[in-house]
Length: 72
Image 1: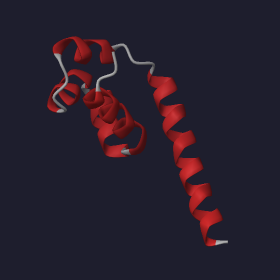
Image 2: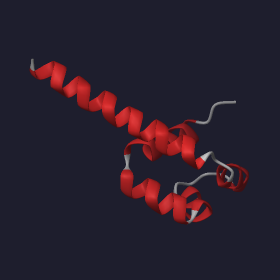
Image 3: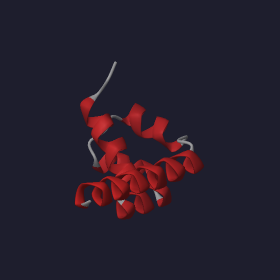
Image 4: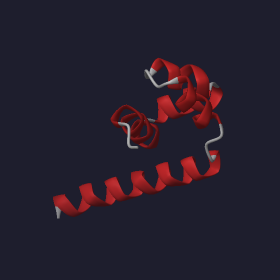
């Protein structure tokens, strides 16, 4: 089942460097602060941290490329 609150939080993790840093230091606190359920918070503790960082960098490059293409 898709949970919009969880999906918004994950999307924010990909694009918000400060949130991602706080989350990586304390996943339970940040996930809880976002209003996620205890089960979701605990599941996020096991997130693939390397994968999260790789995806965030990829999204940043794509966003930057899109901005450059729109200016051209």
